[in-house]
Length: 426
Image (tube, rainbow, N blue to C red):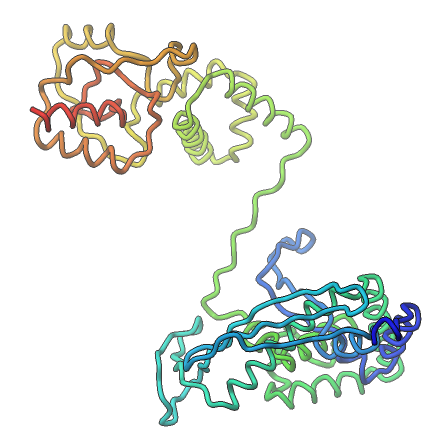
């Protein structure tokens, strides 16, 4: 039948656009829903991120005007807790189909139980307790119909060219703007009456807008119509648009680097690459830069700008700071008191410091294990070695021969495991 009665795309387009010229239908064409927040660089503050799109009512008219579209639903699983439904939308002329499976949970949330079967409880973001109840057959049917309508809307509109949908939405907005110009007060009354039908009083709309309804702008009228359509179709709830009292606004993001700063950052990266730092070494460098920025009360970019100008001096300060640091996120024990001779032997036999790559490894040569672990390890130190090996993610390249394991400042994962294995076998 679809092949015998093919659609005329221009005629179908005309039907969809003409429907949007009717003010009563144009009000139902688009929905608006809040989805988190976004940073407004002009206002230098976070504002609600409102997304909009074609509504379910628009999709019904558009699919009917496009013709030869078949939507099928099939229950594939059903028990006392959930119902799974497969939904398929097909263009019978091109055999293009989109399928989706939804799960309808047979529960509802209510503020009061009213002698109904309570399955669980939870606390909302505003601190109120709600009950999760067993849904009645009517409530399950309402949830099912709402979810099916959304899927048919989302999948069905994929069968219609996007430019036709955009033209229809633009026509609907123009229709409403022309009507609002003729009777602005009537437009405000109509939108407030619509919200009142949903139990949302004008005072709550004023709280959302942040100013009296007498000064509603045309742009705000469009947004309010979209919100009403989202509430009416079950796309969102009124609470989604109101910020909870305890909601913490994210911090203002750091300003983007200028062109000159970007060049400096590129030079900084090249200088870091020339230092042959391991992944943990880069973490130490980032920590050092962060501490320098806090100490000098400047940004990290300004620290890097100064470092690039005199990197040799900056690198020397980093090395001096690095000597005092233990493993990342750990508290090393106080070092043992050693004789000058022991210190001298340690300095002459010690391998490269942990954050730097070994020259032998850069050449591809493996690092042999120590012939014998230190003999002065106490049970307490051994326990700390085990804890460190489990908690620290340390590069295996960072191996030191005669490390002072009692301080745990230069001990690596591989070396620690060798020590543990030696004493367990002993």
